[in-house]
Structure formats: C-alpha cells, structure tokens
Image (cartoon, rainbow, N blue to C red):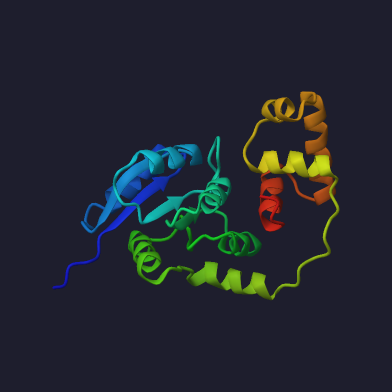
Length: 214
C-alpha cells in the first residue's frame, strides 16, 4: 500500500478542549502531524516565525480573541505566506463563506462534520487546493448567484471603528487608538448596528467581512 503524503498542520481555536478533540481524532492518521496549537491569530503568526518545521495547512477558527480568523487570514496573505488555510467554524451563512473564499481561504468546513470528513478536507486542501462540499458548497453557490445589494455609505470614522471591531479590539482599545472617549466608541458601535441593520457586534464583524472592510 502506497504511503500517504505527510501533512503538517497548525490548529488555531480559542477552545483548548476542541483542539484536544482534534488531536484525538487524528491519532489514527499518522501522515497528519500537528506541529503547533494556537488560541488566537497572534499565536499563529508567532508559531510561523518560530517553528523550523514545514507548515502545509493552518486550520483556522473564526471567533478568536486578540486576532480572529478573518484578520489572521488577511495577515497571512499580506505577508505572502504560501500556506494553505482550512476554515473550521460554526458560521454557515453563504455570504460569509463567499467572502472568506474570495479572501484566500482554501477550504471552509463546519464543525458539526464527521472526523472522517475532517481528514478528507485536509487531504483535499493539501492535494487539490480547494475544499467546499455539501451544505457549505450549496450556500456558496447560492451566495454567488445572489445580486449584491446597493452599497451602504459609511463615514471615514465609522469605517475606522468598524474595522477595529472586526479585528476584535475592545471599546477601550479603539478609544485609545482613535484618541476618543470610550463612550464615543460605544455610540459609534450602537449607530453602526442600527445603520447596518444587524443585532450585535458579531453582526458587524460579518458585515465587515462581507463588504471587504477587513
């Protein structure tokens, strides 16, 4: 039997128990080696700088503190790192999937899939470069067929606040960076939620990704 090509991966997720679960399910797949674990995007970038091992794929969650998966993907592309990415998340919105694939993600998979499918996703990304299947593929196709809505006009300061929110900065951090009061940041946040028509900061993050503000 022909030996399978080794696949070296880094797993980034803010739930340590989830990472341990992925380690366990990969125990029977000797060709897949986890060479690093991270709880946020900053740790991913640090690992890439410090490791001497080859890295083939980074498995990225989206919702992580300090630097989320969206910002991490963008940072990797800006640095020109030739490493493939598999988004492993609970976000199943078609527009979200479309924008992340457009942003350079090599694959997109939901966390409720089987262990076998996770291994298949890694092997597909490694050898074919892209992984989109099942419900995710259907939603991706539908999102591409849906006409883009009329653009929403945001002021320069609204865009600055939105980008910082999308990159997981707190109101205090945003206030310091923009030299404004925390209460002013909170007002901008409330106004953006109302203007964009979402329910929470999580909706602002999704909007920022969909409209390519990050």
